[in-house]
Length: 391
Image 1 (cartoon, rainbow, N blue to C red):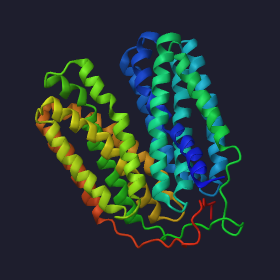
Image 2: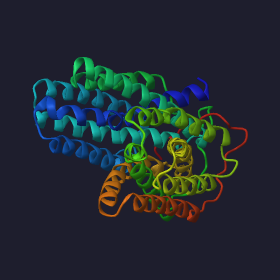
Image 3: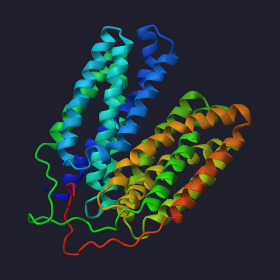
Image 4: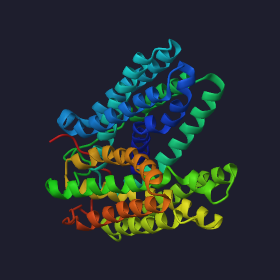
């Protein structure tokens, strides 16, 4: 199997790990009327699912660190498939407790799944290019899943969304079929040799990621309102925001082409500072053209930075423990952002939101800059994919 095919198959499984957050806005909006319940109860279930995903992602290196990651990934996908079917069944029976229980299980196993896929990717040669492929596949997968779920919701109701989730889980099991994580000594490439775990370096990068995505999502959650405030109609704003997929793909492709020519720190710092400036610009009532350019740069810069964050995390620890918990900090930032934007816009104003979001981005860049690492040793003669097993 070629290295690209191996990476794409693993990237599909990683995208399934993020699938719960992809479809969450759809069922949060649909379930209050379906179940006849107040919106805050549905929002509480969604928050609990995100918390379960984050906690189990952080715990995955300790809970499953001695087990082969591919075996754990297959098991979590099977459980996620069953959980999706249980969520659909609970909605048919109009049972919020059963739906909430299945949602918690789904969030927990998807968090573990993200830990396993990133643990595997952290141990491959050319890790940065692998993570760039992850982002390309994730953008395409998330867009297809969201559009498919939205179509099913309109035609068949919210139960169909979770049946689709179950189908994607089963598809993930199929994607892992025959996928190997070879160790050194079996004729394949050896592990990438990286530094021993350094807690401070990993912690700096994880906090930088939290700040980065807190700032990004605080602005991203207010983009539609900003567009309305400068006089654009809903259709125009939706069209501008809809170009985000193209911009995100451009960012992932740029990261893939750039590789590690400038290391991992410099791209993060540059993108963070550019996004900080972009946020200040967007919150100062730009022209419609300026608004479109500013909004387009958000997904471009964000997706471009992600492979460098995860590559830096992978270089800290040969066993991939920091990279494995990276999704929890990414999702944590995404969850904090809307809280920040709502509080600041209501209490102080839109300009203050831009300042705080830009400051979070600047802090992220400074923390990434403070991170230091020795360059890992990758034998030039071994360029194939090399995944690792537990030590």
